[in-house]
Image (cartoon, rainbow, N blue to C red; front, side, top):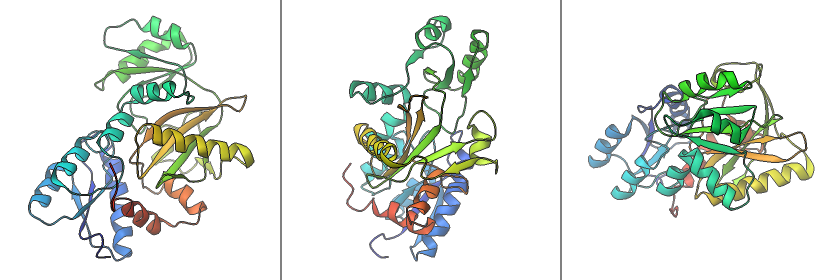
Length: 304
């Protein structure tokens, strides 16, 4: 495995998704080591940069979720130092971390995404809701793992949802709630993995359903025949459109007519025991250890 040199699995960090990142990173580290790869764990960007300056890191497996790891900050630092890394580059990371601008790119390319309005602090909530209609979802534009997200079914509940989302900096996104099956599609080296249909134990696939509950049901592939093929091709196109590279995941809703609506891109998905990309990879015949090595291989000669 000398092609990789010493690999730093960068995990943890300081974002709101730190605990998930620590869990994901521990799993990735163990998998790479089982494959005979010289891999070490490093917690956060400052410690990683110290290790790079000391000459003890040749390549980075980025599993930092959220701010710092998925928004172009880490990517820019690594490119300036000439250190190869997994995942999307600066532009793809920065763009996809911003849900609003991701949706605007998709709109410009006629890639279907739910109606939305952008809400800045102090702006009229009622006007945003009038644009989108009910039911709606209110969320921070630059957070992941369902942090700060609320479903709104009555106009009287929207202010509480805005107040929750406003605890996080940046714009707020008020988005049309598409009612129907929730799906997700993993991308590995430009190709879509089998889709997954998610059936949470409650009404909503929230943080608890994603990372804690053992009652969430997953069906993979989530669709069959032409629908499955169409969804995979749509997600490959959408992933490429926002400059994402290497690997990632796109979240999708399907309405009662069978139409798809793309929600967002995750350029550093979870790699926990509950995570979705490993589930889809397993159905495609790729076990967890092989998946981690294949993700790492995307950093070899990657064009940013």
